[in-house]
Length: 355
View 1 (spheres, helix red, strand yellow):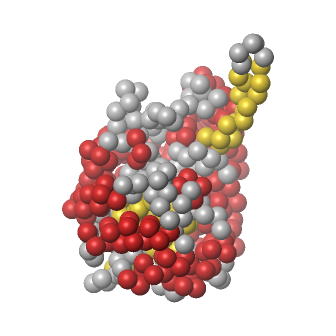
View 2 (spheres, rainbow, N blue to C red):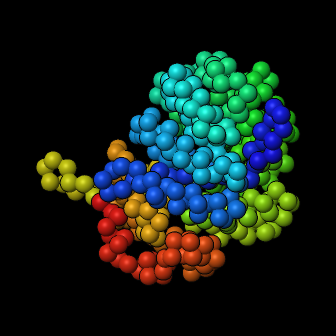
View 3 (cartoon, helix red, strand yellow):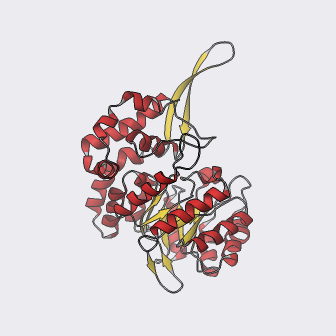
């Protein structure tokens, strides 16, 4: 993170931290500390606690604030923290953002308002600008993800917001729309930080001359922070060949941020049908982390376990990475003292992760 008196530039690979829960459903604070320490040891650019990957919709605000405080406290002086503080209530977002500033975060990540779905005009004036006015000078990063929020802040309103509120220094782009991203770059200028919110599009966004993304807020860097960080550094330095090589090695993981898996249902009357479900982040990554032995893998309802087909899909992805590119997962083995081949072959352990 480069800083000036009034400017913070977010670049590089940032990890959207999962929130580990124990089997009792409570936050596993020791696991959170250990995971943050692992990230710091692997050269990640920054940490993003209490975002949607951290299951923020099901954290109480007391839990949310303690997660931010804990991560910011242990990261202080080493790497910056971008705290998730978004909400579909502007008042809640303001309070969360004030707390993030007091806790020592470098900025706040604010997701577009879900369900009540304000227009782009309302998002700009009644949400982002309102938070900026309530927490002046504190860097804010809009998070644009219409696949989850339905509503979307347009590039035009983002550009107006940036001009009126200079503390809006970056955007997390999870639209999958490269044309939109090029429009954002055109309107917001070369120094505005566009960050990828989709692991599998990061390299394309960084190498596209019309986008020139500054980096990524990554899900799979929970498992492979060193590799994701190296990929981003290579892309930023112009070494597209090296960045592409790493991206290909990470490909099996990137493809399973969301997991599609079919399972049978018996409907009234006794007929059996197979239905394919889509299990969204962080179900896939937490299942991977649990299978490797990094966390328990527990999720907060309404999220839950995948059927066996989903668990086998993420297990197969990890096996493919280990067999072809073991250096991607070796930092996990070393830091957590894990025998990865034994973990991958532990049928009983993986079966316990399925519903």
